[in-house]
Image (spheres, helix red, strand yellow):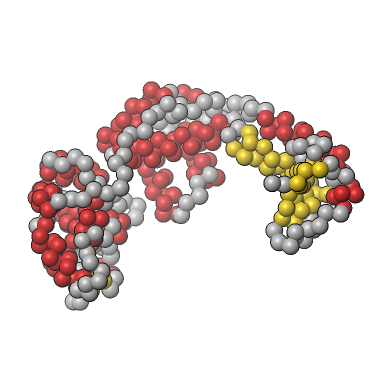
Length: 335
């Protein structure tokens, strides 16, 4: 907790800097006025307040460049301004434009993750992006939320709901909206963790995958089992990473079933499972294809990630013959 005492020139002049970092002291005469003192002796007046849903700091200036009485007056003015609601700037701000500002200034992600979010927004929010923020209603977003869940899965719907809520909160903070229409939008239930897939279920899944019409998608879904690796790694597999003479992928062993599958595929791209519709150049997230597989198999509570988690859990690391273990596991489940 920071020290509190009446700020006077004599007291502030005698403050001893910390050995590292900084310390904070507060003015007991004006409780909102605070002062940083850094290891190099710099002293800076500031105020801090939680306003409009976020913690805000405002630097007032350095001591002794600013007199203590002037700093107290500036602190009072700054606090009043922080507490004052922003006026609605304009009724012309659209969700699309606000989303651009949000992605540019508020999203801190790696480039690939940010690009994926941008693609999902452009693909899933087509009908609402051109609308003015003031025209978007909770009923519209409820219908959109249900549509995304039905066509792309409940997890995707929930993630997009979170993003929409964050965008409207940003719009409120910036004065472009007065209310968040997502506040009463309920999240869909999501099963946490992974579920074990039985040998019988694997057989059903294997037969359902065999019925997939697109040969590239069919091979990718099979490889999700044969690769003993997570979805993103399998779908981004490159031919350069494979050595089918040594039966390895990035130096790690491949099961016999994986080698046979890979040897049957055409090499038309640097990616094993190319896609012209994905910006990444390869299949990214085959949710619709996976849902078709589940429908044909008569299974309704499996995630695509449950495949590799179930299979990898059966590998015994103390047994050095990993490839042999892979072969035995795949022979047993008959996918």
